[in-house]
Image (cartoon, rainbow, N blue to C red; front, side):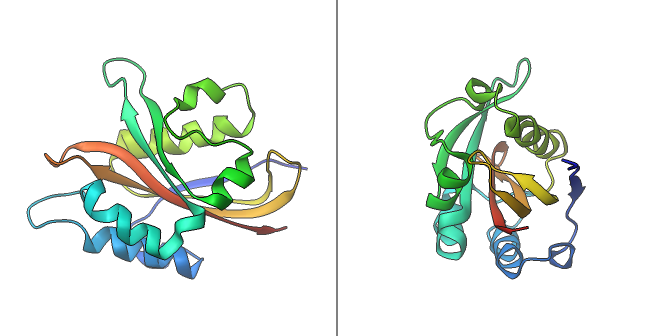
Length: 161
């Protein structure tokens, strides 16, 4: 079995297959204030929760001076179940030894480096409990109150492969 996956920038909603991820992308784009490039997390999070609460995840970027790390802000019920952990308030690097987190760090790093939305997809992805799933995820950059990149909000849709 191959663990290949794709990671691509998202330029428009049609780059996404899953309808709920398209709705999340729309919510992200609508939350961008005039004159800004990114939506403030506090403005986007309630709308995102209404669209994809159980599949949602949100992390704050920390450690800009060196290698960026990410601290969990919010994780929906399905996200916690699929990954077998609740990283709310914890650093993602604490979980680096788990194989799936190499992918997660790559996705988060792509968003942090580019400041642009990214789409992750895998036809066969093994979750922490051994289930084989088809996965599509959307990772969106979000801003702090001053408009600067401060985190990544996203959702992962998964169904049996």
